[in-house]
Image (cartoon, rainbow, N blue to C red):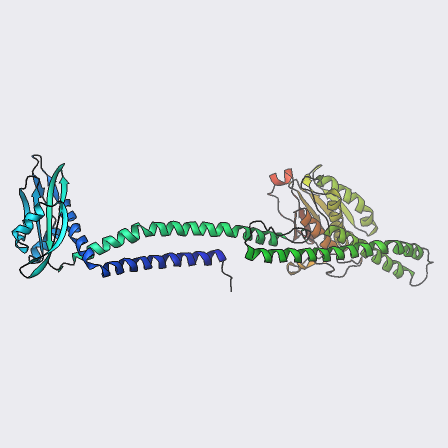
Amino acid sequence: MTPRSLITVLTRRLVLGSVLLTLVNIALVMGYYSLDRDELQRAKIFRQISRIEAALSRGPDGALRFSPGDRLIDDFRDYPDAYAYRILDHDGRLVSEANPGLVSPDVWAGVAASDAASSSVEHQGRTVLVGSQKVVVGGRPARIGFASVGDPSRLVLFVFFDELFVHVFVALLPFAVCLLLVNIVTVRQSMRPLIEAARAARETGHGTTTRRLPTAGLPAEILDMVEAINDALGRLEDALEAERAFTAEAAHALRTPLAVLSARVAQLPQIPGAHPLRDDVASLTRLVEQMLSAAQADTLVVDPAMQSDLAAIARAVAADMAPIAIAAGRQIAYEGPDSCPVMGDADAIAHALRNLVDNGLRFTPAGTEVTLSVQENGLASVRDHGPGIPADRREAVFKRFWRGAASDLGGTGLGLAIVKRIAEAHQAQVSIADAPGGGALVSMRFHGPRAEAGRRAATGGLREQK
């Protein structure tokens, strides 16, 4: 089950809260007018007066004209016993009226004298709501009166929805949307320190155990957990450092007795069992050297400003490894430019290339050639003519002490693990592929001025671990 994002959860809750707030506000508006129906009825009167005013205009001669739409005038035609209106110009002239008998003449006279008022009057045994308002049309005043008995056309609903629109959609929704956006931004900004801490935790790995998760800006509820993780990283760093120190010290301490043992074995006469003993001492010496190299690779830190010539390093490695190749009945060749500057430590890069070449010499058949090539895009490759590496084993070969098919030259199973660690320290990519015509192609792609400009070269491949 994929875990849900905390930001997503908080955002959803904020949206839900905004929706609930809107619904509560609608309920409050409905409850208010349900409890004060008289106010709603008075608002109905002045809304109808506004509708009548919208249908008024003045002609060129200044005369007031009334041009109502069908929806407005139909209420007065369909319900003559329920709605009435009267429109007077500024000089008291009657412009238009409908159903004047709904109220008595003296009530209409009071309407004509009033600028804005509403009241309830009794007429012919019925309660009539009457209201009037002074308006200005075409720069001149006019008076509009409206009367209502009951509400068969349900005009009060228009008032209700108008009030709902004003109090909810106009007043509340923009505020709710703004509040929601502010809350989302606030949540994201508040979660940023935690996101940065998570990113730092993901980047913590081999050689970066000295890093600690950032604690700046973290809330108190998260700070304790992050500090506990930092404490655990500190203990892990101490344990890894103790392991590396033990490996390096043990390998270093074994160098002298192994050197003495090798010298004494070399002095043995040619007796049965002497040759296998020399091979065993040589293998043990090689294992100790590789253990020391592995410990050094684990603590390797490369300065990004450090520059080396990959082509010169590769030529030197090929020259150094040539006697070993000849002694084993193999050949070694270099192909590439005269110079290829890359970012990296020359000694570490040389050590990685030596391991790759030595690995190739162990698996290429006698009489064949191992080719060390460099391209201007920062790609260093080692090709052999051996059995190659199956695709399903190309991840496993980088594990320490993993060994593939047996070789007549033996191996420690540390060579490619060291190469991988050196590549990681240089932020270089290591890849494995089948060489054209058979064999394995082991490649390391380094960063550098020419490397960044020439990334079109094909990626090579890696070789089985020693």
